[in-house]
Image 1: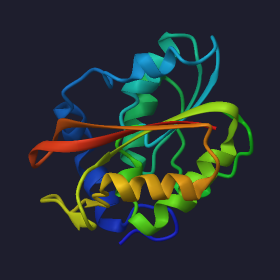
Image 2: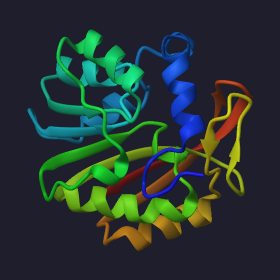
Image 3: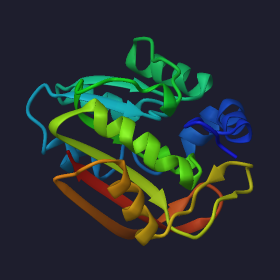
Length: 201
């Protein structure tokens, strides 16, 4: 079980041992929701990405002229991102985020869902604190009830919509909060319901 805002060991081991395989399996060059998110930001805005994976979305942000600061909790993923971006990408747990009003956006594509549900609000509080007033945040989560592991040993919180709203409301005052639920897919389990959260400080 994750503790203290960090992914648990089995989840980290999966990504450490299967980083390239996982990255090759992704269906998109970058998230289909990324450009619409970036369109909300001022040119050159500062973006923090938590759980950047192989760096494909950070690369798109850089291509569009943003000041991007990616990180990942797994050394193997950080290495893939570093190779793609041509610069060092740090390894950082969510609980290590201590920035205060330092960025205009925080992007978390399929990363915070590896936290236990009771740890989500504290990490979201760190994200809220890191954002400047008016800053935007995006994250995606798998729908369900109760934490569980998939066939690869990865831990997921599997949070229903109502409890996801509770976690965000507990994290701090958001001027806007919208959650969309859609059909998607997952690495092992095929069709999967996802929640996409768009929040503004």
